[in-house]
Structures are given as structure tokens and as C-alpha cells.
Length: 461
Ligand code: NAD
Image (cartoon, rainbow, N blue to C red):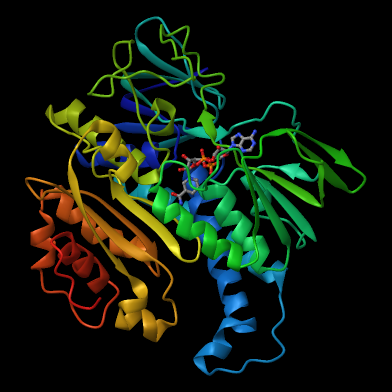
């Protein structure tokens, strides 16, 4: 077997792993990355964030052309769906970006091994890839990510699948049942609803978007219903099976629901199968995550872990930050992630974005806060765009006025939240945001107005 040696070997070429590999190379380490898929970039680039955004954009334009442009005084006729072109466009974007990571590896001198890496154990950092090669390294970083969570009573196959299949249905299903009203369920449910599918979302909780601000989530539910998605809340799915060319879904206390396709989107679980954790002396917690310390070190010397596999918000940018902080700590002794300021976005229409704490969160923690909200219908740019659903909500500490959370549902909420995150990273007060000059007319003025509203002095409402 071929044997090689590196300073650092990263297992997993997704957002946590590939960014860590590049940063470590920038810091002067000799770095290798083991990835089992031919394409680098992980779930995010191959079958997650990027392809879903491509499909959201295409399906959004399709619906706008067929329906919404009329409101703007644009008549369009003969709008037709070319699903195969839409899917090819998505695949091209994925190919370009995953290939881009290969290019970044070459540019930074990161050596890439194709194969499934596993820890060889024995104290020393050794990784066996399937190529086959035995790689010895001073440090090993596990960044193997997550995979879709299975649901008891459901076997995947045929019309019953995960987000991966739902990114590439070869034709628009007549009906689609989505299990789970998290970001995946709502984003992909939106895509196929816009393309003409009758979409029913089954959600166990009495609300959508778990973990988000409850008020914002109820606006999202109202708007999505108006767009044609059907919701059955408080519905616990107990099974699904293939029936004819379609499937039938069992829901506790309800009649079974038949559909052409079923998308199971009930969360994701850490991916550690075949990693050889036991051999290396690492045990996982009850939910399968790898426990790490503040420096991302696992219980095995010289072995670190970042990203979805260690728990916390399963977001690509959280993994990026952890990958960077981990290798910076290894090389320089410093590196940290501010978990209080990790934005999150659901790319529905309108987008739902948040950073920091929710009202429910603050109430539970007994933290006194003041709140300011501003609706997009009072924002000039939103009116001009014809996208006036939603609002911005700013939560600030009752005494210090420090911003504790910002929640946005509205046009380009995902871009607006970046300003809130930057402000919070600098420890801003709502007064700081309120006194910052915002260009007019912009959607970001709604954030300024919400900050003014914390002190009861919004100007345009
Ligand atoms: P999620 O955990 O956000 O939502 C899953 C939903 O399924 C929950 O609301 C849960 O109550 C429901 N559920 C669970 N069991 C059920 C049952 N038996 N019957 C009915 N409902 C049931 O998970 P997700 O949407 O699959 O996303 C997975 C992860 O990926 C999340 O951490 C998410 O934040 C992340 N993600 C983020 C984005 C984004 O940032 N835009 C996009 C996609 C995914």
C-alpha cells in the first residue's frame, strides 16, 4: 500500500473540510483532504444549498413570468416550463462550483485523495483511504458532515426520497407530500409547487420553521398558504409505502394521504459510519455527534472535528467558521467562533432570515428586552419591487440596548441580515443601527426603521 505523510489530513471535502484545508495551507501546513465523492464541496455544493438555490431561482422566475409580472405591467404569453433545461442549468452550476474547489485546492497546494477515509487508530494520526493509501499525519480533522435523517416506518426508494432526489425529479409530480416544515421542506416544497405540483406539507409541530421566531414563522405560513402550498400541522407521520406508481403516507389520527412523490425532510443526522471512531478511541454522544472541546479537539490526541458532525446549527457557514478557527488554533494558538452571531436563512419567498436570539428564547432565559418592528409594506423599495409581505423585528436588551436578535421575513431578507450580523459582531446597540445612515430607497431602511421602533420613534409607520 502506498504510504504518505502530511502535517494535516482533513476527512471530508464539504464546507467545513475544504475551507479548513485551504486555510491550513495558507498558514503553511502541508495539507491533504480525503473525500469519497468525485466532486468536492460536500452536501452544500453537490446536493444542498447551491442546487436548491438554482432551482428556487428558476422556479421563482417561471412563476413570476406566468403570474406575477402582470402586476408590474408586463404581459407575457406562451410561458412554458423546460424542466430538463432547468435541471441541466442547476447541474452546470454545481459542476462549476465543485470544480472551483478543485481549482482552489490546486492553487493552495492541498493534496486531494479520492476515497473513503477512516481512522487507522493506534494513537498516531493515520487515515486509510480506499485509493488505497495510508496517510500519516500529525493532526487529523474530521469534517464528514451529515446525511438526511431516516424516519421510522419509511423505507426510501422509488417515489419516496430525500432532498437529494427532490432536486432532480425528472418530471413535475402531480402531487407531492413533504414531511417536515423545516428549511428543506419549505424550500423544495416551494420549488415544485411553483412548477405546478400540488404540495402538501405534513408537520409534527403546530408551526413551521422550528427554532425560528414564532411570529415570523406564522407570517411565513400565511404567505406560503396563499402561494398554494397546503399545510397539515400537528401531523405526525408514522409511515409511508409505495403504492402503484406513487406512495401512501400514514399520519397519526388522519386518513392516509396518497401522492405521486414523497419528500422526507425531518432533519439531518451526523455522518460517522465507517470512520473508525472506536479504533481511535472516540465515542459519539446519544445523538451520534462527536463531542469536541472549545478548540474542536476530540477525545483522541491530534484528532479534531468541525461542522455538522459535531452538532449545533447544521449550516455551511457555521462549518466554514469552525474549520477556520480549528486550524488557526492548531497553527497559531488563537481562533474562535462567535456562536451568538450565526445567521440563518430559509430561501422561501419571501426569504426568512435571523441572527441572534428569538423572543421565546429571551423570555425563557428571563432576559428583559425591547422590541421594534417595521413592515415591508411601509418601505418604498419593497413597494417598487411589488414584494411587500413581511417585516423586520429588532430585539434589544432592555437596559443596555445591545442588539440581541434580528428577525426578518421579506424580500432579500438573507442579504438584509448581513448588516444585522455585522452590527451584532461589533456589539452594536439598536440606537447605533437607528443612527446609521441607510441609502434611500433600499430594503435595508426597514432594518433602520425597526431599530428606531425599539425606542418608539419609527418615522414611516
Ligand atoms: P429541520 O429539523 O429544520 O425540520 C424538520 C421538521 O420535520 C421539524 O419541524 C420536525 O418537527 C418535523 N418532523 C420530524 N419528524 C416528523 C414526523 N414524524 N412527522 C411530521 N413531521 C416531522 O430539518 P430539515 O428541514 O430537514 O433541515 C435539516 C438541516 O439542514 C437543518 O439543520 C436546517 O437548518 C439545515 N438546512 C438549512 C437550510 C438553509 O439554511 N437555507 C436549508 C436546508 C437545510
